[in-house]
Length: 311
Picture 1 (cartoon, one colour):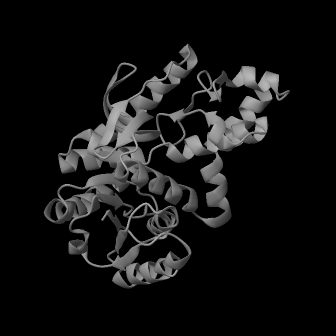
Picture 2 (cartoon, one colour; picture 1 turned 135 degrees about the horizontal axis):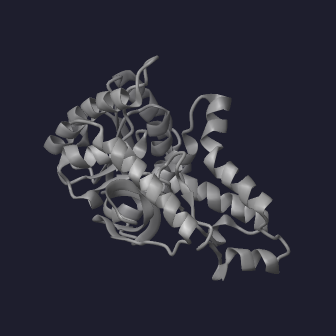
């Protein structure tokens, strides 16, 4: 029986649980939150979707309810206070993670950690340092959603299914992310060659529109409804399925990485092979010189930010 514990029953945690039910990612999901009534209400509401989806037990409980979990999703954290610096916020969230990870150590020591709390790359770095687990077992959702957005917009422009587009967003889940155009493919054909063959040329204007569509998506959603949760909920479910089914799937996720284009110890996203033991291998795409420089900048930014957080 595959069990997932989700700590943090807010919109992201609940959306992840809902997506996991619909996709049949696990047979047992427990929601844990310091607001026990919220966790109970979310679990009960999502449980009412089970008859329309895959069989799954939905429940809520205290930290001890995560016992035996194969995956623990961390979707908890504190909000930024007015005037608070990013480093101060990260330090407060590190304190929250320290408490949670101590409970994980006691109740689910063999679980793989799946980090959803933002800023996800730095929080994944913090979770790796606090837990002492190998980096491959502390996985941030990273750019899995940015990659989905990139593929969706490319597919729309080319008039094909996003599932037939192979393209990745690398680096930070944030402003310094890198859209890897140079190695993007549609089927087995380079993206620009494919575009020419179907009469949908990728001009500089198209590149700019898609880049803006990917890079600014979260800002537009936040402006409209305050936060994002459905897309990342589905992304977390996809990662969980890859782990629990030992798929050896290639997904763009964030882990602490020994060296990325000459930058040591950055926690960021690359395409990675994911299976039952977590991240099994890193894959470095062929990048042009501009993309390499952008990825180096993103890696340095993240390494510096993580290093500034004292644990």
